Length: 383
Ligand SMILES: Nc1ncnc2c1ncn2[C@@H]1O[C@H](COP(=O)(O)OP(=O)(O)O)[C@@H](O)[C@H]1O
Ligand SMILES: [Mg+2]
Image (cartoon, rainbow, N blue to C red; front, side):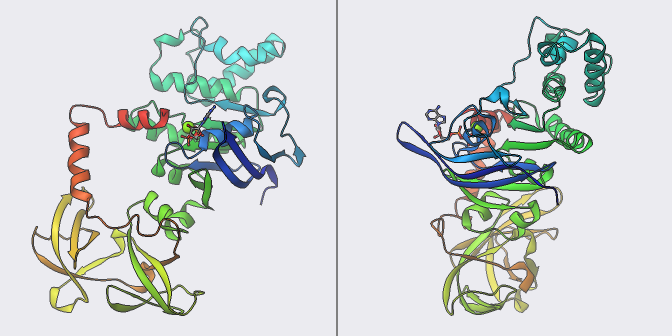
């Protein structure tokens, strides 16, 4: 494992007496791709700005390569930042936009030229040197911003929702490309997004945040398969979250029945939250099932159907490639490895039932009607 590059030690941040970050402890390793993920207002940008030196935390320390840099100004840090609203210099062409930082360092013309051309090749903008930046598409402008940030060879690049302004297709392409560039150059990335798919697709490590606190740190697989609490389970993907009682190791009760599971380490009869992902539920013939309900919503999603199934008033989301009719009676089984047990938390009872699902779905359709869906995301990101 690579050695530590950045460490945030017990960081707290207040603005006008209002607590925005609390007990932030995070280690970022050399060459790691770490993503801060959470809803708008949870403190992602503030955390990034503290790493970059644009904010000084109310308490706690920032370490870079083992050295305390809490009070070091941004320009003395080996860090570069791509902000949410990266602004290219409109009066300079592509080459000069990228060369800007090197000119400030007064490097020899030869070196500037070779380094800028190398960066433009890296971001697939070979031949665009003389273009004016307003003759570029959004995606191309984004590439120039990336080349400009990387040409100075920072040890660490901070990126604050850099793809927020791009449409979905381009966003996906750029995700893959940023990942490639990061691996090729071996630069550490700390990336901010509120888009869970983006975080899962790109990161080595995901840091899930809510209300100014870290909720979980882990690999994308950890975060998805072993969420620490109901907030994480709900925020990352779709989840049914049901009240349960842990009877003993590997035996949990919910929906009035006992189920074998793989989890242990809880108190006897401890109240817990049980997470079951919609894709892990198997619909079976009615007479064979132990959980029975009625289909109240069917949505075709391409790869599978998404069903809402009412079981004694609790609405489950179930995904299956087999079609079931609206109103039909169905049964399902849940295998031990589909069950994940979480401790009760302040988030218990807030998520995990799909009773409001169809309303939310109707509203989405109305809002997106005639508009580009990513518009909404962008507003969210800019709050
Ligand atoms: N300079 C500031 N002054 C006062 N409040 C701020 C300032 N910057 C951020 N905040 C507040 O801190 C909270 C976290 O903001 P931010 O870090 O931008 O969240 P995120 O990037 O996750 O959306 C928000 O409630 C925001 O209003
Ligand atoms: Mg932000």
